Figure 1 (cartoon, rainbow, N blue to C red):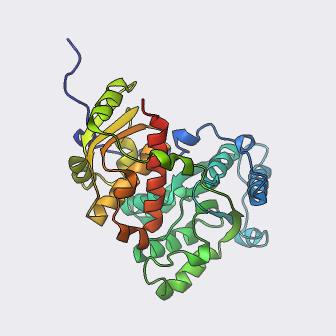
Figure 2: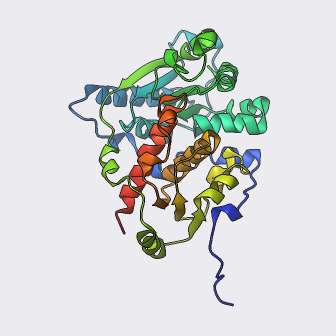
Figure 3: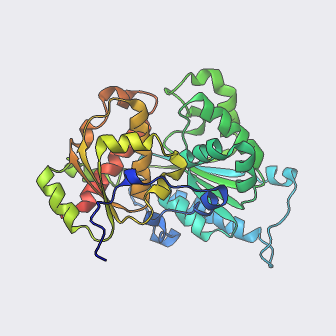
Length: 344
């Protein structure tokens, strides 16, 4: 039999994943599979980067020391943990300063059991399996790494408070974010009405600040999407399995697939191409697309797009609303992926 002539498309997939399978996937994505502390190169112009590296190395060393020689974790009373300072660390800094590199390096250096996921994946997991099941699955971890911690709405705030209270201090937590803990939710919803809850989240963390420019900023010079002819040429040359989708059809499909399964949606693909990209008028669609872009970027799936440029994808009003940091990260990552494509 010959090869299947039908084109591969993301819209033809509806992945089904159960709790144990979802938890087994909670490891650093392929983009950060090989990073280690010794591959992080601090900028001499920004001393906070070297300080953050040292802080994460100490945190990792502390986790190793707390292991028994047999590999079993030490059993500590709640009071014992509280006298040792904050049980969690919070890497605060702008886009592209190496926060995720340090977070993934910490995960690789830490003893088992451990889990790594983004904040969006955490809230999606809780929403998908329920709070009790999520706490049961993650509460037994030695270390929980949470990338891109952010509070976008009231539900996430209340959910996060409940979850952290359930797992800390038995689980050591390290998170990255673009906003200080006591300023989470600022400008996104009526955060002043939930100041107590936000303070409860902040109380768990000791802040480690990282300064510096976005290393991906150079990619923005190639942030324009491709014309149709160039798109077709590059997609035809993509090595490995490649999915090619229509943008509008893909947005419709993303509404049908729970975000917790977006990673599985990309399983087996080395590249994805999307035709007809245009400004997204519906904010719900925009946020789902941002979540897909995060998965594409982290999994190092090559990405090509035909249509409007990255800077035109989100209306200007989105950049000043409650989800502005999601859109900023999405634009940065889309531009970086197009730069990696390199014009074929």
